[in-house]
Length: 216
Ligand SMILES: [Zn+2]
Image 1 (cartoon, protein in one colour):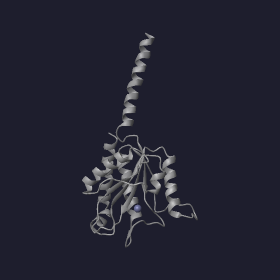
Image 2 (tube, protein in one colour; image 1 turned 180 degrees about the vertical axis):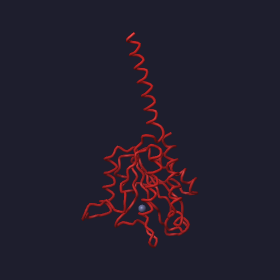
Image 3 (cartoon, rainbow, N blue to C red; image 1 turned 135 degrees about the vertical axis):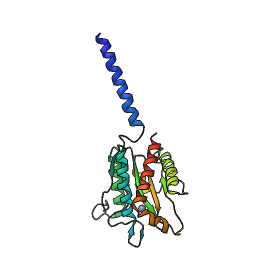
Image 4 (cartoon, rainbow, N blue to C red; image 1 turned 135 degrees about the horizontal axis):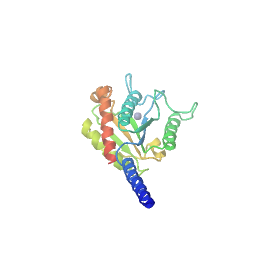
């Protein structure tokens, strides 16, 4: 009689484990994601008149945080306001800023990270959201391609996910992650859109759909 209850207990634990592990391995529920809005403070990023890339990066990241939290994701940002992360009197302020972002991400228990940036080109006709990845982690390519496909569809971008090993921050991070250039601040049409709340939200939602696919 006693062994029957032990077997029943094992059965319940097994069901619970399958359910819990299954939920953890699929979908966004329970994930931890680090968002890295590029630049900030003394470093405005790419600039057009008084429009700063750093400000728009942060707005997109904040909207993405909200959308991810709706899906049960724990979200951290490398910065929550308009500042950079360099140590005081750093010899190379930019590198210090990027190193500290990398340390935050490396020391966290995040499943992946996304750097959010805007692009600028020498021609004002250049446009389109683009995802960059490096091969520090094998899964970066898949993550980049899935996000690119969704962003291309939702934002009508013709860009392709692109491999680069020139990203100072990304070379240092031992977690899966990619860099998203959400559009060109140098393109009049995208510049107009990128400043709009509804468009920033559209970008955020597109990234969430992509992440869901990545985890399916
Ligand atoms: Zn940037």
